[in-house]
Image 1 (spheres, rainbow, N blue to C red):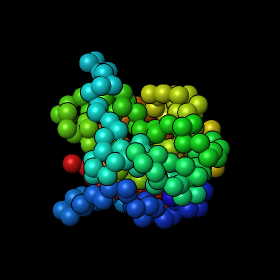
Image 2 (cartoon, helix red, strand yellow):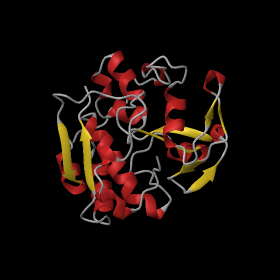
Image 3 (cartoon, helix red, strand yellow):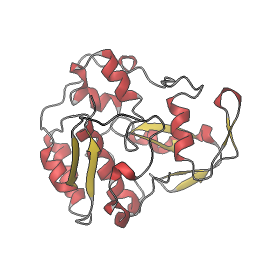
Image 4 (tube, one colour):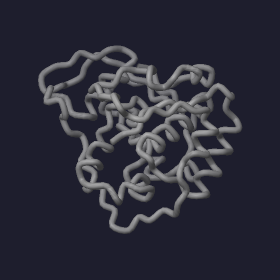
Length: 221
């Protein structure tokens, strides 16, 4: 699955952009399909509060389906532009990946980080502090949506760190609308809030995207 979509490709509903590595039931779940500007407007607005945050409160890189590949490796397998060979211990060889944040390609999966589209600290600030440990674990390992976790170059992931769109934006110009939709889809999926500065930054980016850009996702439980 290639994440580096052009703006025009955003006309394709995001739920069909890729099959998740672990299937997630959607029966009875609320689906959202809105133009990105409307999706931004629908996000709850609130003040951020990082009090009590610890990264360890989000258990991540678990092996949910017990197939020997943890969440990080599942994402790498899913997002490879050249399918890797999967060896013992879920070792990956002979694959190739493209980091859509900067457009760089690599055949070395160790040079990639798996980025939480909305960083764990930002999720905590935006509502996850009220969740129980199991919901935070589901968030940190969300393979049910191809928007939540992305394989990107380690440098860009660390530049982004825990910043929201008011503090960091994807450097590849042709990835701007994809990043906007991915961010808004993740906040929508998990019913996370935005602060006023973040919302203004999202609205400014949305104004640069085609009217066909949409947010399509299913609300997580």
